[in-house]
Length: 556
Ligand SMILES: [Zn+2]
Image 1: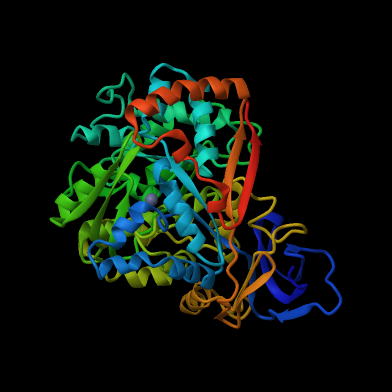
Image 2: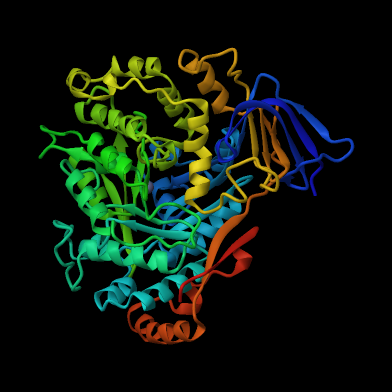
């Protein structure tokens, strides 16, 4: 067990406990935030520094078989995908203590757990792709919501997943026929079911199971001009569904990498930002939240659990790509992408992410992301924060954009600058609430897990709006990072002797009879159509370095 530590005199930003920069001592004992320290506790002097809870990345692609395909593709650009140990180091350096791998197919979950074992320091969890799952679609087309929920509960428990991800719902099934979704109301080939039916059905399933995180949605038509209509229509289709009153979260839906889903225009010539349409919607509907998916003008291999979109991008860029179909479950594609401020479309895309973050009134509905490695890298977060806290920082970039983008963008007219308190919300507190883990994580109240970060930036002496470069530097490399009470970063030096890190997963309990009957039906199908049988799909706990099971009682 760890020693007791007192982090003294820091400016504490802890939004869950309404603490906004007050000078306080944070006491750590036995891996948790405590009221009293042990005799002889270690002292960390955080005078003139910022103290925050550990940050949480709610949407990144860092450990899956699709990431591994990306790693083997288009070197040296694929190096931005990082190795397992680099991922742990880059996260912990910035004060991140939990990430969510946003797209794992159940059949390949074992691979993700093996990568998780190899990522040091930080906690992790993953979302299971279910939007093109053949069994899900079979249940939903017969309107068997309860059986579908039972299957999902079994799937999450078997592969040790945390929540549900829908990427281009129904799209992987259409892709198997060499086609893409043209209309979200049109039936998917072979199924009497539309993409909208899948979204609605799985939102109901998610609520029936009382899952800690809402449905995590990458809507249809990602990245296409004019896709704002699809996004809004999708949101409207679920707005009357009741949210589980047993889940701690407020949300019914998490909109992933929102930047990619609010484009106007009919083609690339008339391409424009529709950030105001999405933010107006979010401002009126507290059950929607989003991560921004900010572009940072990087170049990288991008990975999408949506082969149709990867193919579309590859054709657009006239670049090579790679794709993989996973039987009965989904597909993914990787493609090399370059974003340039001198390109009109890329420049507008850069403004859209920031416009979204700055125009959603309630920061609790916003989460920072670059959809690593797709829109930017996880190492770019401090840079994105500098753009959010400083109009000056944004204006510096705006002056380098394609002239048409400078003239058409809304961003130059937005004056809002995030405060450090709001930054603490969109980098940790909002994520903890959204994931339903805000008792243990995302704050510094008594009893919380001792995930604490100290950044060397004095908010009394420096105005983040003017000193954004100083802030970016401080956030890029934390002075101290304590993970579950263990000091991992001290005076900017990472202690590589500590490994640490737990895997969070969800066991949503359902009625045993219903589970037995549902699985019996499934067995026959798996035997007939799948090359992996049920026992082999399951991932044993021994694959998890430290297992953190979250037990939920569902409505079934
Ligand atoms: Zn993503």
